[in-house]
Amino acid sequence: MADKQDRMCMVVSEGSFDKAMMPLIMGTTAAATGTDVHVFYTFFGTKLVTKKGSKPKLPGMWRLFTGMFIKRMKAVGIGSYAEMLRQAQDMGVSFYACTTTMGLMGVKESDLLPGVKILGAAAFLKLAAESQTTLFIG
Amino acid sequence: MAKARGNVYLCPRESALRGIVNTVGEILLQKDATLDAKGLMCPMPIVHLAKKIKEMKSGQVLELLADDVGAKEDVPAWCSRTGNQLVGTETEGKLLKFYIKVK
Image (cartoon, chains in turn yellow, brown):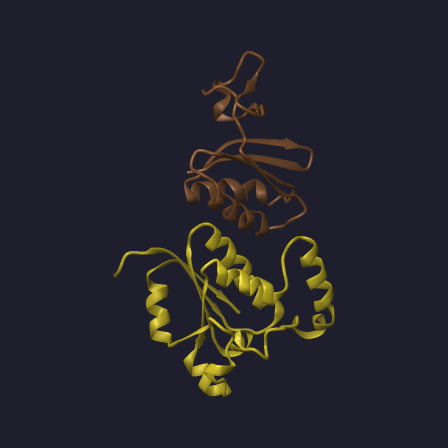
């Protein structure tokens, strides 16, 4: 097997606010350390990297408290989801949408946020196999 | 140790640098910049720190101010991962001060 790189791969399978923020917080931290970060969005996570789904809410009853969470996070320097995503991209974090999910959910390439690439599972697994850290957010 | 050119700050008692102190127990290092990360929570102090260090020159010393309890472990971990040297730390109540020498 290939040598492990200073690389971190994350899989995001849910589209709620908490699942959206976690990979961005972890990803920006790792990128700040010089780690090469790749985030792969699949199933309900895919909507997080589409233009329509870029304002995620907390799941269930917590949905009502999303605004409060955002306000509190802003107070400690953590920006909104869109701001954090942009910051992560500026820091070199790569974002991928799963090709199969895009097919299943009818997401077109033009629906994706700028800078988000399309990747199949095999290509992602190759990246993950060579990574020191792999995390599943879901 | 080079002569102090600018600011002087106290060496923490537990620091490995304690040997390099003057007669009144002060360590003489110049800090070239200060980054105020007070009020910010993980991961923002680290994100700002990484950006600031990139702007600085090799051998310069950055003073980082933070009050996030996570920073206590985060900053040394970040330094050891990136190869920048943590030359001193100080605690004043909740305020943490880190002195980082740029790689």
